[in-house]
Length: 105
Image (cartoon, rainbow, N blue to C red; front, side, top):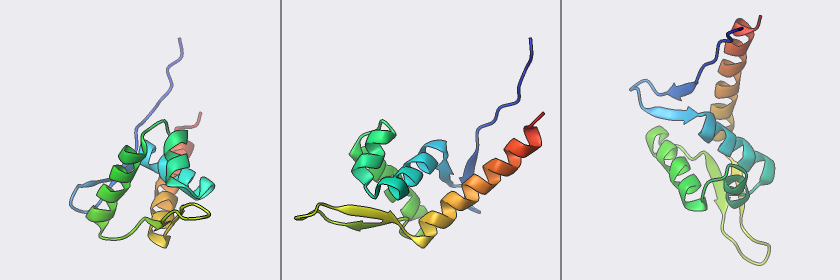
């Protein structure tokens, strides 16, 4: 039997507060891809309310908006990542890539 290393990654702020893990990372990536919090929540198999809560929690800790939101109307609502949101997923992806490369056989 072969054993393979695996890991769970999350980022914290300098006070040890959770910012982002795999689930929030995927949610933010899906928002970036779909332009919709609702569609991103569906892709992540979570409720819209739960997705919204996850984002607001991180935004409150960081005191920065991760997602720019436009309310619905004739054309419907729209969501896109802020620069801070893009930077957070960039940091997560970069860290994950470094760890994956170090674990590669």
